[in-house]
Image 1 (cartoon, rainbow, N blue to C red):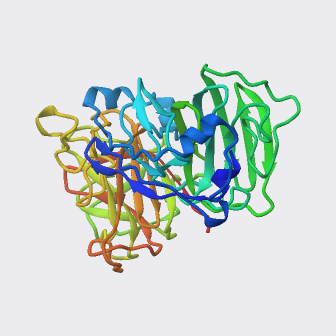
Image 2 (cartoon, rainbow, N blue to C red):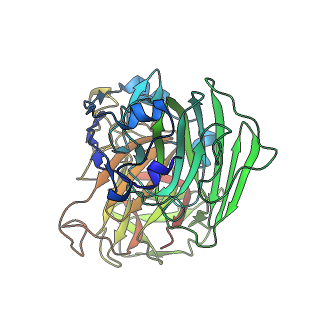
Length: 434
């Protein structure tokens, strides 16, 4: 981290998401007036920050084979792990600032431009995060946690986990303006791939580099949920294998479905077998949580025996009404056998709002859906690959079918029709703290 970043406000450029094509638009960052004459620390930094270049938008595409190859294995996906970067596109990311963020050889790379953040579009609260980074000797970069797109001061606005040389006050793994690295932290190496593991739970933050614990920090005033950001300050840095696992989810399933309200007058039947699997069959209907949720992360593990079988996870529902909420679709059906062409929105798609960009589940096999709703932003991952990234920009309305609903509502599992034969062996959820 440099003192320059502390006093920067970043212009925001948001990706236009069209199926698997992502277009990135760059724009200039802004320095606060009191620091317009701040001197950079090095010639390299001066070159980067004084650059007036406006970097051209770069489109990125991925084919079905590439996206399906990015799926995680069953054990990782079942544990809740997802990829934040699919290796081919910047789907699910947003740029703040003017720098040449790009994809090279399966990495996210940057080496020119003004101070900038590349941020997840979705905020996260408690999680494990792993990534690999490769930085040059004089590079100043970092991984920002619980961050907004605009930063005034990392001492109060976010947790900035630094990537920097040993002569920096906060060398790699230090938390800028909060906590220096431990005395026995590993010495820096440059121009090679290193692994960073971060655990952020409540007020506690732990950072390890190359399997060695390097920094621990407890925040007396812990931050609420925020984005994850990758930083360009100066020098070259590349990132790859960026994965996250949310922490703190609690199960909604038990033998008696005690956390759910049933509707006996509806045709759908909901039972839990001896293996703890919820079975949905019999026709149209719903089962509804007794508790309401507004912002949450939900992990479900589902199986649909045939491609044409349809179900769904409804959320922020109006309690007691028939499936009156947003719907995360459960459907593995595709058109003409093409995974990039969902026949009915596709698992992880937000029904009637945004189709899944790829069918990542398979008929007759267990698959996972990780669904996140935070304010007006919604996103889903199937088997670890992000398939949707949607923001509700409609006018507010109590009914999510008619407009934007930010208020808490129930979770419902859908029985779609007489052919529905769905199984769910895991439904876990965590609310975002305010």
